[in-house]
Every structure is written in structure tokens, then in C-alpha cells.
Length: 424
Image (tube, rainbow, N blue to C red; front, side, top):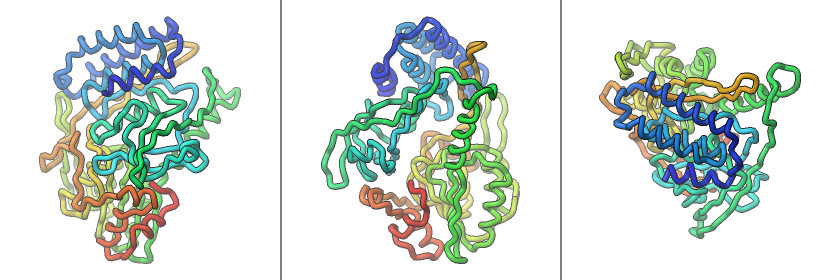
């Protein structure tokens, strides 16, 4: 199914592929294999025959008709290892695409979780709470769901996307949604002689603002900390912890948190223990490295951790440790199950006109102190609380309402859904 999606859907944006672009694609493919052979934690590569798979990929690239097909082939080649942190990040596309919709897994089903006001998705009637039966060539399901946004956002952005959805009232609909395409320039001058570099900086700043921490105080009884990433710094973590220490209860919302820095994960965990604790082990090719949590600014109050199917990597490890050490209660949906340690290797092709791309490789497997292997399994919450299609449509938040109830606060799902301006 994935190979079909990556290769056949690419023909919608087919173009004549120059010999230079084809050779660049082959260079990227070969570089990906070198990175695997040098850095991948498992020297057996999960039993994958690299020579055979790369030969097949090279033949496919030689027959490809577009850059999107080339990128899809390289992506497919690495996806064969079935590893959440081993993937190809292609060169940035000239044009940027804003879809106006977001999808997510709830339980074992896929739903529309957000629709941007004023977008074509809104005009076509796509709505929060619609169950997604098909999007493009994909029939979304929990296993491998992450590959769908990976495909649409990184490998082959689409100008139009067909959907088959089931409305909250049970009606099945076929919808084709146009994306907002922001035209770019094939070449960017980052020497500072024009506005290209400042455009890049502004875009980076806007993306960073989307990952800001949010804290909501509930009287003097609890604080809700919405933490969308572990890609933060010590000061940011400590400032939020300092605020939490003023309250007897903390609801840490890690829904949608895709992980981030190992250092900040361990720093945050240090606030919830009063002793040094080995919480897991990193298994590399030749060494085993313990994950050790050192006490740091101990928070002694009640703790509830919220997770969902988009909680991944560091957020999964955090939730598991809180559950494993009986330090708090984990509420929400089963997490993604994408828990390896990935290292990004940046490369470029070209001299005067440089194209940048990245190969991410898992350099370590992670096994928790209780022998749990989270990769492919995820964290099962202490309390499984899933929003219904109606909850999503009405912006009700039963998981947050339950978390608040655990710390002694009476909020309805509708009231909980209004606590944050930004909605899931």
C-alpha cells in the first residue's frame, strides 16, 4: 500500500526529469545507504537485504518521470526497515502548500481534527469530526499513519486532495479539496543581498511560535501545561516548572507532542523524582548507554499526563516513566509507538547551486527499565479516554475534563475544550 501511494500518486505532478535531477536522485539514494551502513544500530538491518533493495530503487529512479517520484522511491527504500526514526527528508519544494485541514487517529479510526476557516476545505464542507475513509491513495489506519502526513508534507505536496469521509450524521461523502499553493522561487539567495534570507527567518519564527508552551492556571488549584515539543532549552523547561511549583497539581498535556531532545526529556523527568533513576537503556551497535534521570527541582504535587496517537518519542518515554514509577496518572489515547533515537545527517549536492537534504538514521534502540519496548507498541494510558466524532465536531475535550477531575476540578468536556485558544 505504501509503495503504491508513494509511486502512483506522484504521477499527478509528473514532469520531465532532467538527467541532472536523475543523477542527483541516485546520489541521494547511495548516500542514504552509506549513512545506514555507517550508523544504523542494527548491523543486520532487521533482515533487509540492502543490496537487493537499493538495486531495485536505482532501477526505479532510472525510470522515474518527476522529482516527486524520485523522492518517493528514496523514501520507500528507507521505509523498508519499518523504523520510525529512519527516513529521508528531501530538498525543500519550491512551492509551499497549505492544506487547510489536519487529520488524526482516535482509537483505531482516522478523523478530521481541524479545518482552517476560509480554506477550500471549509468551503467544500470538510468538518472536524468527519471520519476519513480515504485520503488521496491512502486508507488511513493506526499502523503506519505517520507516513500519510510525511508523504503529503515532505515527499509530494498536492494541489488538490480527494477525500472519502463519513459525516457525524453517518452520511458518506466524496470531496475534492484544493490546497493553497504559495509560489516560491527555484533559487534562493541567502547571502543577504535580497529578502530571501529574511523570508526564511520569518517562516522559522512563525513555526517556532506554533511550538510555544502554553500554561493555563485554574485558580490556585492546578495548572495545565500544554507542551507541544521537547525541542526546547533548559531555561524554557525550568521557567514552566517554576510556574508549576506554585500549584498543588499539574496536568501536563503532551497530546500532539512528537518528541525532541533527549537532554530536555531527562531534565523534565528530573522534576518528578527525588533520587537518581535509570529509566531505560540505549542499545547501540557496540555499546549500551543507560538513560539516567537526575533529580532537578522536585515537583511534589499530583501529576496527570495527557497523551494521544500523535504523542511520540520523548513524550512516550516521559508518559511511560510516570506510569512505570507510579508518579502520576496517564490519560488519553494509546501513543504513536515511534520510540527510537534518531540522528540527522545533513547532505548537499551541487556547488554553485546547492540542494540540501537529510537522512535520519536510528542509531539506538530504547528499552525501558521494566523491559518494555515502546517502538511499534506505544504507551497504553491508565485511563483510556477518547473523544467521539461529536466531541471533535463540537470542540469538546473529554480527556482534559477527566484529567481535571482526577486533580479534583469539575469541568465538563465542553468547558475543558474552551480552556485553550488553540484547539487540537
